[in-house]
Length: 111
Image (tube, rainbow, N blue to C red; front, side, top):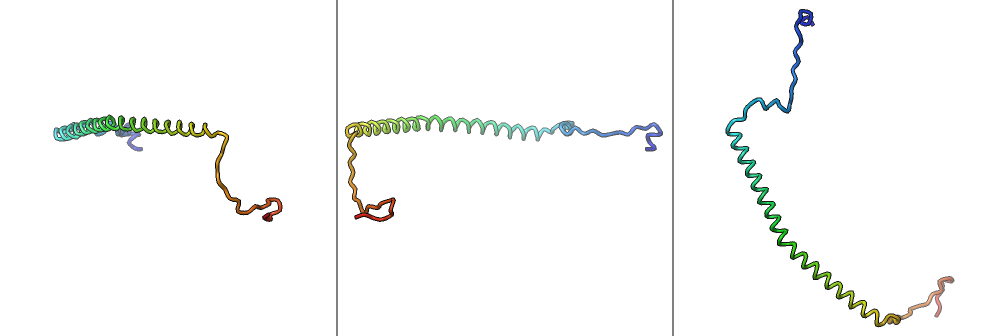
């Protein structure tokens, strides 16, 4: 505090972390390396997207044809089932055998 009494001011240092390292100019080697890495990333991203597009173009018709075929098959099965049920709508045929009759109220069996 003696420095303030003599008319000196305290100096404060402010650090701006966003621009702190930008005062140095990047050297030529780092510019070349970053350019090569950035270009490689862009080229590989482009080729990956083209491969994805090619796979999509190949798979879409295959899946569409498969869905169309399954839908057609399902509609044919539904039409056949509907036609067979309309013929015998009132008659239900089944075979069964009564093993033992039980009276639910009494819990005993009747023969």
